[in-house]
Image 1: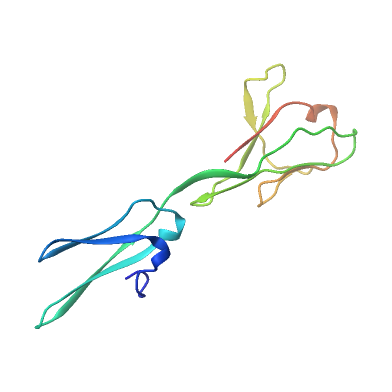
Image 2: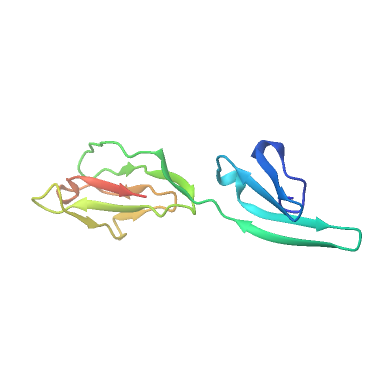
Length: 139
């Protein structure tokens, strides 16, 4: 059983009997849909017992929206989108290249002109020369 209901066919679970006392539930491939509580029920003419175990499938981040290069007129707003799926939900972090280096980055912290939204987007309200550079989104 999964989450108190019969095991759904779409999970493609396989129950194998090892011996008269042991059975196994296995999956050849798992996804986030497999997250849940699995219950094994053992019965005989005298009694019935069950044991439940939780399965959590961790899914690495995968880009839903990758950031793209932008150009903006000074004083105008600009939005960089960055979104990723995964489990647990990925944390989006923005970094900007340090002055004079394209390989060293510093974490961007929100302020009155720069905001990082809950959906992962980076907004610069009024672009200035100081905002010129390379930006990196990490999930």
